[in-house]
Amino acid sequence: MDVIELATACKKAAEAGSCVDVIKACDYVLGPAFQFKATVEEWSFVVAGRPGEPPAKWMPRIMGNVSGHPVYSDGSKFMSEAICSIDPENRLVVTSRGVYVLGEVDETFRDKVFGGSSEQAILAKYAEILKGVA
Image 1: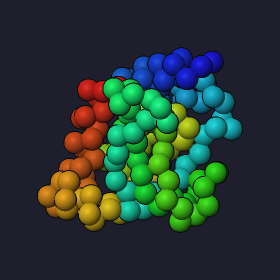
Image 2: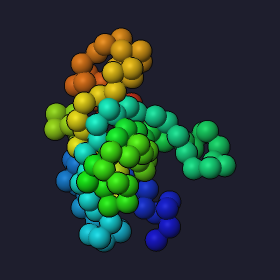
Image 3: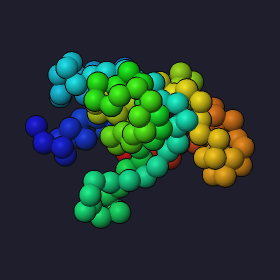
């Protein structure tokens, strides 16, 4: 299965509106070995793509200090895969590879980009934005 097929499967699951649906779809496509749950502190959202990819194809991603990730060591700065779904109420971000539990937002991101909005408001806004791009 190529990246386009994977993204399509995750997009269809995200349209169903449930993180559980996204995880099941990604689990079906990639297998359970690719799924994990990690925590991200001092998080922010970015829009980025792969090296050489045109900006029109860039997707929202989460960035911050990760712990519990199978590849990155605890406390490492990282940027996730493209986001499939956001669950603002439970503070979860789902990607094609795993689930990220959000800790504290990056203060600069919150204050400068969102004028001091609550973390819940930021997550709700990005969930809404994601529905338009996914």
